[in-house]
Length: 308
Ligand code: G3H
Ligand code: 13P
Ligand code: ZN
Image (cartoon, rainbow, N blue to C red; front, side, top):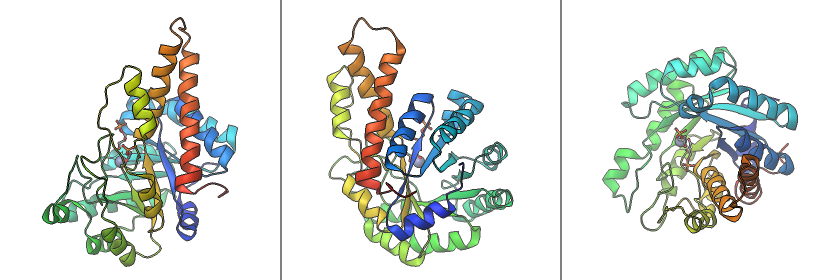
């Protein structure tokens, strides 16, 4: 069934595991993720960005996710990723999403509260849950100094005040992750002390980690071997994701790892089969790569296997 994340997060928090929130924009990506979750008996969050809605046309994504639920019988949350204003959140809520993110993190604290509160009010009235964000995800960073951290990372006391004032259901925090395939120039590091502080001030409250792809070296190498050019790509080590899941992080956002797995497999399939021109062949290879990668994450990193 199509569900909200309320109960999922409660169980994940208590069980010290996390639910994967995977970005989707076409049929093969959805099928690969859902097949993996089905085999692992894991709940899922499928999330759609504004860009994905524009690419696929919202109705196609909605219907594909409905098909996935009907076919798999899995508990699935349909979530808006990085909603930039009240309007897009409202649209998705009215379209039947069960969860939306309002990302007003680039505004001042008070303005972020005001916008988030408005979305929460509208969403809760319709039984929809809301994720907000406080703090700014880093750009590519090496050794961020203390004053830079205080300017961009989530301030624990503010996080507590923000949750109290907005009534939001989950909160995305900034502790050193960033979007995309180039997360760290030097050694990967996240501010776990800050995460502990946030958890201490917000006990039993689900936190969200954006920019949480591992940028699996296996797929980066495959891309580069088969004609790609993505040198120096680096993500969040799997051990750090496991650690975050012990500290109140219940939702782990993954997009880049899906893109890399699919692209690596398609690049390889096209080079290995030069006479093929049937898209089902290489898109099928992409779908299989996504399935195997997601299954690995669910079972070995997030720990949401056998949770239904
Ligand atoms: O947070 C960003 C996600 O990776 C979605 O990316 O806006 O290119 O669809 P997108
Ligand atoms: P990645 O780029 O690390 O996959 O992060 C995705 C994300 O946070 C989507 O909101
Ligand atoms: Zn994000």
